[in-house]
Image (tube, rainbow, N blue to C red; front, side, top):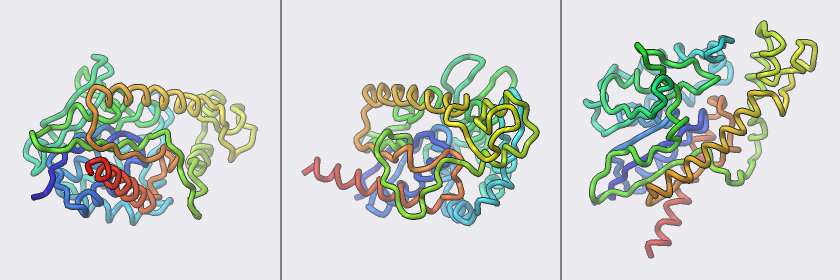
Length: 302
């Protein structure tokens, strides 16, 4: 009889692709995933998996080159964000039929944040596409989803790894996947470029004013500086670093209140939030992290 798992998948941009490797490794080791909850990229991977379309999604994702990713992303410098994800979601929707969450073959929950009401939103029913789109709207980066008086942004803002939202059965194991772990990352040959330089180069080609360049950390903020350099102390970079520390505190508290039976961790230094073209590498990292966690759990059980 297979051991059942309730799986919580965390936020983390492109690093969330590692969730695919985790799922593959769990299944290869004889575990049965009976329910999934996800925030941000965790909601996307979890929703695709719950819909039974992970094979198609993985095949599409691993076929994308860096240029393919560039062409799918619409940069829009506005007060709401700098990226529109309509093209990406349209591609995903093309091989995922429009389904209601409550009709999926696997229990699924997406977590988003309602800015208007200042509260976490747990989406257990309704359109799967809409739920994923609401959960992945990273503040300052991806334009938020507005529906009536509700403004949805990334679920990871309030619940980066939703272990307390996944549906539980009496005999299951609670497995959490954190792709923002503050743990060392062993660099491998060919993995040197993980600071999203190319994205900043593309942004630099847009007509940005001095403040926008300073915010993004491009050049020296006056339009005349080093074109292809990203400032270590740009506002965006500073906000990213400080927000990651806040998310760490939230996760630590969440895990204390709802301790997972198995915690699978991927280093936050393993890739940038835009590194979707590194899908194969990130999937393998997920497999490696899951193998390590499974071995450690088996040792503890003995």
